Image (cartoon, rainbow over all chains, first blue to last red; front, side):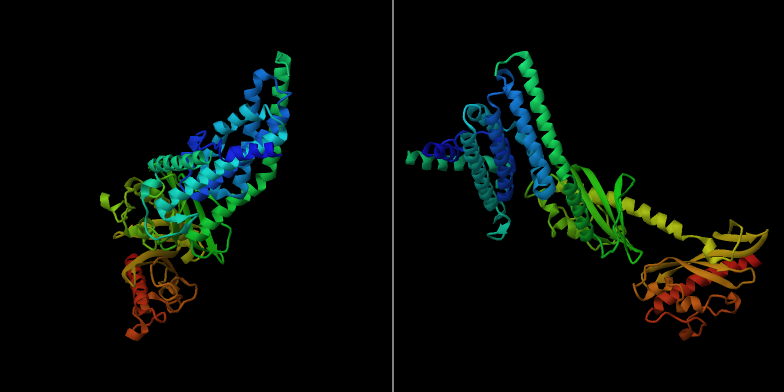
Length: 196
Length: 326
């Protein structure tokens, strides 16, 4: 159990996909204009990641090695389509805001990366925990970046006004995404290396 | 599993089949909720941009825009028109613009845009320079370009391109609105409605005025003449008056007016004081002035100015009618 728990916490901290592995930068930079958008994107990715990790781990022994990548992609794409349909049906506003980044989860390297590096070598339970850990790590990072950008850029968090006024617009624009990501990465590294 | 050709083809086939089946099931499950969510979105937008209505406005395509007609108790209360400008900072800007029947912009809702967050994307807020430039304004009395281009639209700070696209989208919807109103007006203009039964009708001109003559079995049974007055409470009042050959006023239709709702607008009602004092009367015996001013026509209550304009417009048609008999 201790070993299993490590699979989970590794994804959150030691292998945090955003701050340590620096994977999936495209959605990270593009969708974190507000905390809610970051959280939405994170949760959608989390769902796809956990489900595809489970299924790929189940199928690992029957997928011929040479066609494993196309097989993974088909599985991942199916889950992404499912997420897309569900979001369209029940959270349409979020779906409209995230737009093209939802279908682009298919090519998010975190997901294919975990399928290839982890799920295809571990059992179902471990893969699910790994997906959950990595997914939550990604969700947490995106939400954090979203909170900082929304706070500095429009003076609110999750749409609630913290202070009146316009805020520093640059944090909402693309350069702000790089600034915030960079500084948060520094802080994250500083905190985690001290622990080790 | 061994990567033999047979295995590879078979497994990929099976995986693809199972996955597409799963997607198909979810698609089927979510089809109805997605349709409902999209419909709800349109209904919400319509409620936001139109005066109160009680029908289910249908989406009708017209001149490349989508139009919804809203009615209350069977009467048209406004039109919501979707307009898209392709010239946004990041592609299309799609708006839904609500007009009431007087050509006033009731409200505007942004349906789709991908403008810069924090700059152009402020156009979707409920209270911004753009929407305030339009809201409650008479569309024909404003120039729909940003102030920088000499128009009446205040642009969003640091978002001139987005603002231009917004103004352009509104301008598109106004073109459609004008076309709709013209069509409605044209449908309203029906000389037969103010004339006795006939089997033929022709138009002729006397001194610049157009006269519609209705005939039955070759004999003239009535003449419809248009007249107007510029002295209404809010500008022009235009009427169409039907005369019988002996000079009796058969019926009167109001073609155009901008009078005060509930007061001057009563002139359009079926049996109002004005029309009652004119219908069936010989025009030669009518004193064209309000009763309070020595005439023979009862004014609408609390709408003396509108009533005067109405009388003036009717009198103008009588001047034309007199020329027919000469």
